[in-house]
Image (cartoon, rainbow, N blue to C red):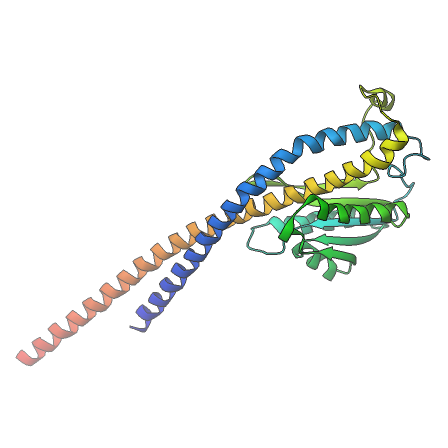
Length: 288
């Protein structure tokens, strides 16, 4: 009977877990719809603005392009780790950690610092000895362009002051609920145009009132938009990853409960059969 009691306890425990994972799946599905709509609306604007920025940066000389300054050797690098504040999202945060560690291993001569948006990946990397310059864990409580802009302005200021030769963003790019791609995206300096620079700089753009005014307005706005898009991508990816993970966990719990119920019924039937045999054996002993 002790075996039956253990099985009953396990069935109850698995059933409770299944209810929790099912509820978490539904919550993430509801949040995913809003997050997905936000990133889908944002992408066309961000991509067009980045295209203009890259073309503009190709036509700026070293004196004008303060955000295009490229060091001969990258000695100081800042990684902006965009992850989540909570776990139970499959490999969502672990993939960010792997990408950051790969980046660090690929540049052994550079000094790396980390800034965290979300705590999970940041905590792991910070514990590995990478110096932190801060974190922003409450950003997801009210995810707005203004809130992200404050972080972008801080990053731009540190780059202008020459504290870092490169600033990169590591985040999960959202494709759908089941698929997210880890991106290591250069934030600063502004990425160079690939291919023929002269052709790209000529482009189809007429800059008014002039490049100097655009430099003080469009480039900072584009950088803020780039960071905002990365955070929105990560936010949607988090809920997609969590929904998928909780869906799999619910399916696994359902299957495990079926197996436990089958084992329980077999053990119960065996116990009943043993009791019947004992009764029959006792009755035969009385007759003799």
